[in-house]
Length: 155
Image (tube, rainbow, N blue to C red; front, side, top):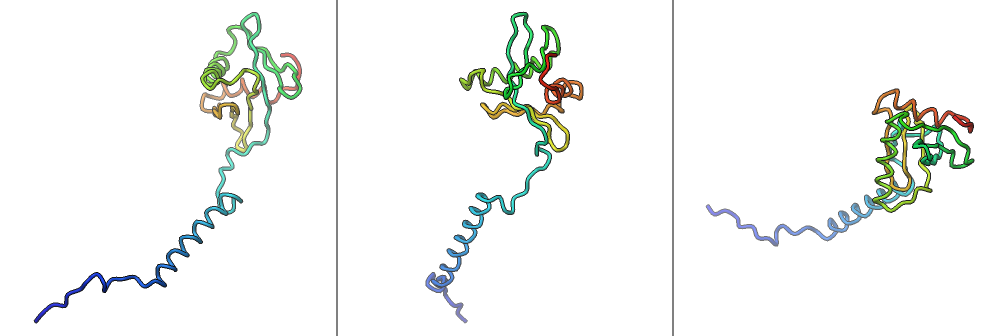
């Protein structure tokens, strides 16, 4: 008894099937593109939705301190004296270092945000850097919280 011999000609895909597969691929690509453009079907992490934001500018003072200004009103919000709050200084130095590498000037403001879940995030829009301040402890986060909650009065 002989076994049937199959050739490659027996395995051809019908042209109609190729058109259906190509059409399906085009539909999937179109739906992905629509989702990217409109946001439909995308999940968003509500933990980073902001409920309060303030743009800040930090300037060195002649006595070695750091003056914090509301960027929109130019009101002095707080002054850290020399030797006061090392965490704020360290966080700002790290961000200033990244700005220097990116050749961004000191004039661009920082964004301090309170999220939906009551965490504070310091963002440098000029470099895209984000620091979630809760990761450094409640006391360190509170040192930045006073800048967000404070009215424009000297501190």
